Image (cartoon, rainbow, N blue to C red; front, side):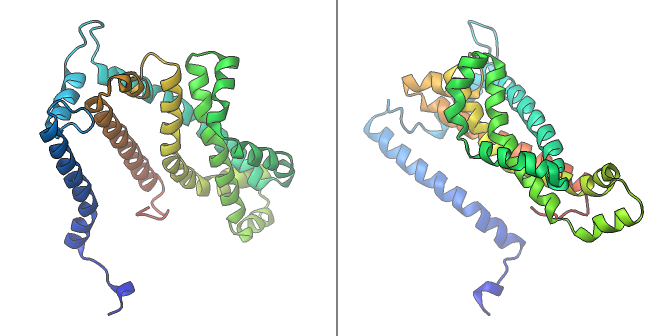
Amino acid sequence: MRLINRRPDRGTALVLAALPFALVALAYVLGSAERLAENPADKLLPSFATMAETFGRLAFVADARTGDYILVSDTLASLERLASALFISTALALVLGLLIGLLPLVNALLAPFVALVSMVPPLALLPILFIVMGLGEASKIALIVIGVAPFLTRDLAMRVRELPREQIIKAQTLGASTWLIALRIVLPQIVPRLIDGVRLSLGPAFLFLIAAEAIASDSGLGYRIFLVRRYLAMDVILPYVAWITLLSVAIDYGLARLRDAAFPWFGRGA
């Protein structure tokens, strides 16, 4: 049998999926053990036990100075900024993407502008945002919106243009207006694509969030990582990176389940 036609069964697929994670964990354990054997006070590659102890303290032991649970307060601060930015980005992309993809006049007006904005490196705008909008929440949220919304808008506009032209023609033949076509034919077909677009944007969104928090913030996951870097506190940094990854996976999973529940006809397994 050709290799291209060989498909793993469920058990084999699980083993293959777990193998890269196991290899990375093994490499880390071996490297950590070697460094700690030479220097028990080494901070670069702390043991899993040390990281678990630190993570537990940050999550379940109140800070003596503020009385807050540091991991909880940092997580809530970051998720609030992320949720606000993604909500704004999604709303903008839904409206603009629908209009640009469906209406030729709006496409001629806004498509070149959105394309240009999408090419601007968002992190290069961060100093400008801080100068114009200050160091508060608005500038952090604006950075994520600038980084995410143009991508979502262009993706949705292309999805609208990919819809079969026959659907639009038949609807017009039956007397449907432009706005009825947009609401009843186009919108239901692009919303699941929008959900997938948000899923794909989670990585960049967290990147912009952490960058903004690292430069000007007094709370958040990015703030904490850059705060402790001066102490080489890898027992804090590595668990925080893992925690951010788990949050991204959880949000991605939730959005995928939402898409499947609301639009069961859309492609599953993505």
